[in-house]
Image (cartoon, rainbow, N blue to C red; front, side, top):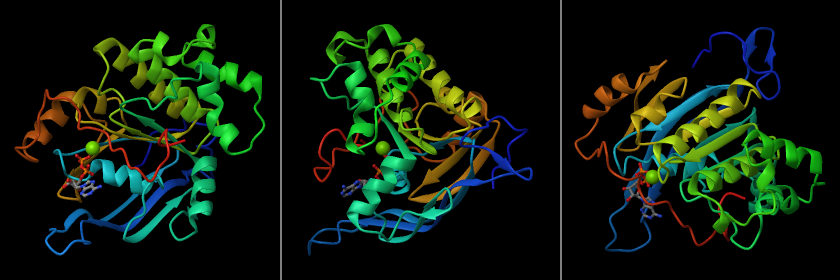
Length: 286
Ligand SMILES: Nc1ncnc2c1ncn2[C@@H]1O[C@H](COP(=O)(O)OP(=O)(O)O)[C@@H](O)[C@H]1O
Ligand SMILES: [Mg+2]
């Protein structure tokens, strides 16, 4: 659906016969909350979302608060299950298996970055970074850990604990952790929502780099048009439905489109609070 100009990636985004392969596909994904209680009104958070993203693309997801952005990301990333519909990553169906299979699938193919970093406070930078490998029972290659921390500019902070780091540095650890297992798709929910402008730029640059250099696929939820302008394309969500898309976006064009999407949108406001689903033992996304 979203063509890419030229070949940028070689690893996860390798191309076969000229056409980039599909990294993520959603078909009629629906999620309804609150159907349990008698008095409880059901909320359709996702209303039949269908999309396809090629490997090696950087996509921003925008929409008014409550439009379903986080739900979309969590269903696409296998952190939550849709009520109906199909999610495919790298041509393999993620929906449908057991919880154990889903967890394994996620650990092998998906990385996560969240607004609040979700680092374990008692572990140092290197230990936080290798956590996904340890949980997956995979061998920890020290050279790989050093390489991924050097990529995010923290090779000299390996023994620091999160409370000894700035917010921007913490988020860069979270990016290293998301990348260490070489996932196909990296999902980020408001990754710059708690950061100052400069740290935000660093984080966005790193996400862009993992797409352009490593050929990974990045899907980023943001409410910030400047952040979204780092992406190759923007998907607009309203009331749980995809209502538009923009290629080669500029911050001004995005802001202009957003003003027509909904009056609930807060252009300068803080990001929505992250979800803390009690079903996921901390930290979410690992
Ligand atoms: N765990 C939940 N239980 C009930 N309703 C939820 C839950 N998570 C989200 N919702 C509702 O689903 C809709 C979409 O939420 P969300 O995906 O968080 O939107 P966004 O990230 O765009 O702000 C909202 O109406 C929200 O209140
Ligand atoms: Mg949200």
